[in-house]
Image: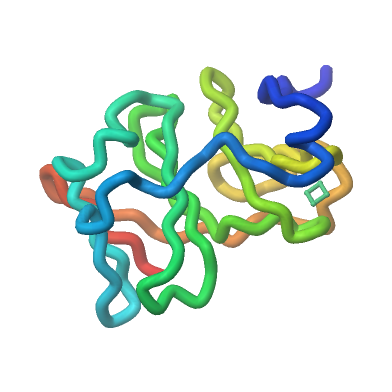
Length: 138
Ligand code: FES
């Protein structure tokens, strides 16, 4: 059985245009001492299961995808497919994340590859939650 695909058109796939956006509020997260701290009260994009934001800039060496998983937990990944380095989106309802490119490599929340041309697992970051604050170790 093949992995469910996120509904994206061929142009979005060809150009690697992801569904996941940066958070609208720039003050919703900070980077300090190797940790990203996310204030969930300032990040409405992460309210629903299956949602995600991508974080970059502010001194981060890589783009980071933060997902509010279908399992109710928060997960974080280096936002780079191990095939051609395209970015990723969650696939709501499936507990997976998927490359936004044509190859649609699909991964479990533990980073393991389910299917697609990717060369290996995703880099997964540890996420700790305390109330409405997430701490992502990068
Ligand atoms: S870049 Fe991800 S499948 Fe090709």
